[in-house]
Amino acid sequence: GKTDSQIVLEALALHGWSEDAAVARLDAFRERYVAALEAVREHLIEDMPILPGVPEVLRQLATLDTTQSLLTGNYESAALVKLGAIGLEHHFDFTVGAFGSDHRDRTRLVPIALEKVLRRYDASLMPEDIVVVGDTPPADLPPGATAFDSLLGGDPIDGPAEVDPDAPAIIAFTSGTT
Image (tube, rainbow, N blue to C red; front, side, top):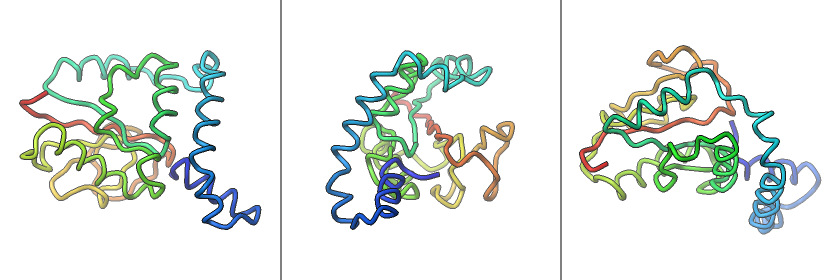
């Protein structure tokens, strides 16, 4: 999986743009891209089917002592539009997620999300309190954190798995301060 910025930068490089020139245009691209998503918001649901059971799992997690957020290569504003279009945005705390707008290198997103979680909620959280559901390789997690591959039946994964590289991850943690 790649971040939105990485995709744009690679596409512009193929057309001869220098990295500096392309980076200088990323904010303008993001603004136009999100505006375009907003313009077709009502049609997004056709292209984004919700997997069976997802709303029920999210509702159940909300009743537990957990906080849920996202880790995705999408720009944060794009993720909000997309989840809003399918009615799932209210399940996630966007303030502790990590997005393609936080860094263009997707491998940097897990540490960014964890830093946000520790700063906002509880600096004493341990890696054992953190569960990442999705396609984040365990090597990108802190020692002790658990990764569940949501696309392979929810089994804990001990190493790289063949998963959809564009699927977002959900980061959830337990804390007495939620």
